[in-house]
Image (cartoon, rainbow, N blue to C red; front, side, top):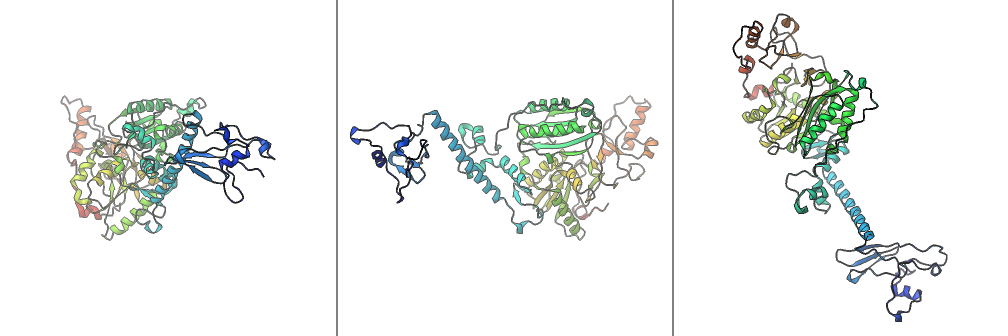
Length: 557
């Protein structure tokens, strides 16, 4: 039976090149014969109507020896040259286009396989043993990385791809990945703290709305979206311009903050418009594999919930007052899903009633937000702006010493920076934060441990998931939780005043502002009136907490 090149003999030996030359009747005395790239004649191999195709892979090992692989074995030849047999197609030379292309393709496949294996091993190393899935990591938590918990495989995959591409590349023995090498001088290691990949170009694509009627696009029945995305933005101005064009194209209103560290937005529009907005945002290359569907928090509303559209470039996407280069969002606390957070709060409240809790349930929002709704047993700082939060932490470090801290805010973004700042002080034992904020918690636990309304930064002022009212009218004390702006033109404070008191003309936030309002309406004021009122005068900018009473208060409202 005819054999192909490199085919094993019955004894297992591979036919030598010399034996094959003799089979072809070559006269060695005529000197070196020109090696033909043509396959052997079919007459040499009876029963074969078609010439044989090469079945070898040509490789050069790191030692420089040529290796030939065939159906029955491989043979390394000295000097790094692979010996050919008659009838075998010559291997593409290193300078030939075909050789370069095939070599590059083989290299890419090899590197891709190594990276896939390294990626799997990296993810495997982040698995949480079943026996260790204790407090803060319920049964659903299967992976932990960078102080974050992940329940589903796509979540940990997305995180590793975004933040640990370099680690995976080094583990695969490939050095820094192409993305990192491209962003560092001379292809060397990427600078410490740099992103795992260069920021992609911003797409200017706008959705096709030709199939949507104007009525559907501008309907007053719609939604308000709340979202944020931390990522590297090389050209914030360009992203800002695209966002403005996108929102105007979809007739959306709202507020969008853009910075080199990412984007933070809340926009309102028709259901069709907000749906298209989400779709376009998810397809934007800049947010690919970072932003996902569940990052958008939605509530009933529409374009009418905002007076206009404001899109701008800022230093921070949430105003904390600390340069993102000094305090990175990457140093956050451990993210807990709503289910995990619910279990933690339940355990905390149980221990707190017995005076045994080592946990602080911390509200990162402003006083007027927590006033109309908060988690039971929380510590709600009496601060007016989030930029006061770092000072609050500094003034109350003793309060957090050796404590487990559970943090929460409206949608999660303030906890990203707030938990990073608290961790930077190195006083807490552990810092956790509610992933998706109160918004996501209420979607799963409308009658859970959060009582009252959820304050929102638009003309609705609040949205509700339960019927509880935990705040009162400023003047008569009746239960009331619907905010209005102080009627004084010189004040921007929010006031809780019930309809009965409003009818009596009590529409200002305090007697000082009420007096100012009377002077303005009576046209008796020729003087310049200050914005400061009784509300701001009596409130310390940064309160000092009294540890025992606030920590052990279970907050039964």
